[in-house]
Image (cartoon, rainbow, N blue to C red; front, side, top):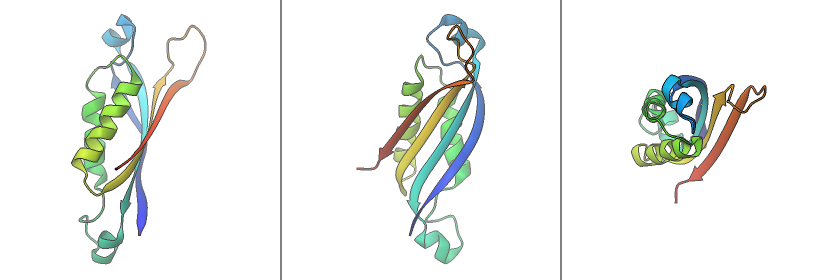
Length: 120
């Protein structure tokens, strides 16, 4: 019985960006992550074993968001790799990272990068 565990609307002040001022003063980012896993064991036993602990999932996202990168694509790849490496019950990951009010020379609520990866 496969299902998804998701964390939506995670907010971080981080220092990702191509421009020096982005890496110095930072910006606000929003992260949505969903992982697919088999719920059978967890549902039968009412225990975390056999599912994904969302505190662990949050910690992985937080640790990568704290490491400055120029590109959101790089951050997304690192988060997904860490999830698949550390959470062996995860079958796939869907991730969306948004930079709020990006410096594009005009009004924009957010710039978003989305990435999905399935365990092979």
